[in-house]
Image (cartoon, rainbow, N blue to C red; front, side, top):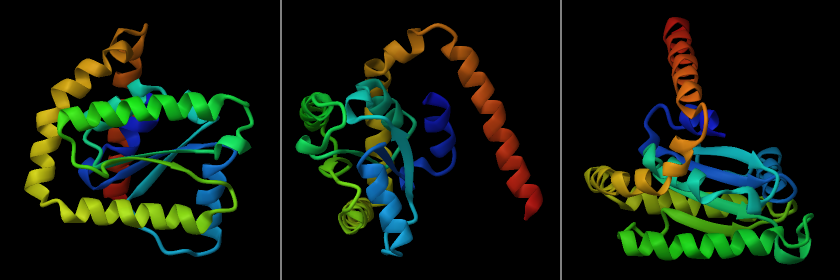
Length: 189
């Protein structure tokens, strides 16, 4: 998960909308949006997780620590959860995070929670476009200042990740992979 976060946010992270999508519903909604050719921002980067209950707060804090412009926390509607109580657990976690981000002074809309079914590709694309409008409405210098101002808090809140065994090794390895991929893209140009 950490390697995915680092790779997706390696270049111009402040322009990215990182979308955590549950495997069963919102991932399908994103897929439907793409296959239906609904127009939505090209700045979205998605990560599939099995359930919104598996979207640990540390991952959200880490995404913002790495400079993500916005984060979408999406999953099943309550009645559709494949894990019965997973959506309720995820929803409670997300509500606590919304309150934390408000206290930090985060611009409203940079963190968004949406419940999207696999049949709601139109909703998925609309949500992303609204999030892009939010990012576009923040002057770049103000957004970069907000990200830097909140980075220490995000780092403190995601500290459990840094304390997990071998995370430093994984970080170093993912850095090498990212540099290698960026170099390959430069050579291909």
